[in-house]
Amino acid sequence: MGAKSKLARARDRQPQTSATALRSFLGHTSQGEPLSNNRAPADDLAPWVARVYATQVEMRPDDTMSCGMLADTPVLRLLFSGNWTAETRDGHGRYGPSALFFGAQTKRMPVTVKGSFATVGVALKPGAVTALKGPVVSETLDRIILYDHIYGHKEWGSSAQMIEWFDPAGPAERWLKVAEKLFRMLAERAGGTKPDPIIAAFDKAAFANPNLNIGEFATEHDIERRRLERLIKKSYGQTAKQVLRRARVLDIAAHLRGVADNREEEEAALRFFDQSHMIREFRSFFGMTPRQFARSPQPFMTLTLEARQARRLEVLGRTLPGNLPPWRS
Image (cartoon, rainbow, N blue to C red):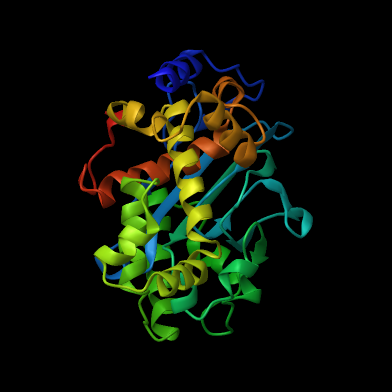
């Protein structure tokens, strides 16, 4: 219970107020951080797509928002506005309006944006990149790659054409509809191959219990352990152990940002041996302690964590698609 009480105290401390004045058109957390319009994809896209979401935030032209990202899924993301930077595996990157492929992150990736920004994203399920004839997943981790270098096609669209098709001046829900339509075309062009069902089962199991035993999971699903581990490495770009460690710390991070079901807080905290174990793990992924994370503004991280937790509750059957998650109710 010690870990849980320390977590609660860290979360309940009011985070420091950011000097950046912003207005989110799609909602705020209780601390004033922006929320996204995020939801499950259309049913026919469910084999590949984890989540679709849009953000739209107004800031003063010279204001800069500094934060970071740590996502457990690759994301096809369109940046409609804002001047962006990121510290990626390839070094310091600068990005204007463009269509980009964000590989999943193995640790916090520092990100900034100057001025108002709007984005739309399609988060991909584990195994989807391989099924859709994309790059080797391990080679995309912690990287941002121009869309044209992966899926761009003279008929299907370049990065610049994608921005035009979406009509950045339109409503966010329309962006999501267009994203689904274009992704449907991509899946068809790639042959419509679906990820291995065992990876979907592992993904769900990791949401339910990031401390699961890989050997027991393999036995329960009648698959040889080494084959399972190879499939996980191919689908996630990381070992099963690395995937589960990240899942465990992302659950805790969501509670610290107030975008998780409070009824699960104690269970999430007790997945760590003790408080020092939690702090070590948190530092290794975020570069800061849980208390520092809770007390400092984390706008991009909160957006990412909220979409992940909303999907997690739906995958586990704890809420229905279309219903508000507990923290928004």
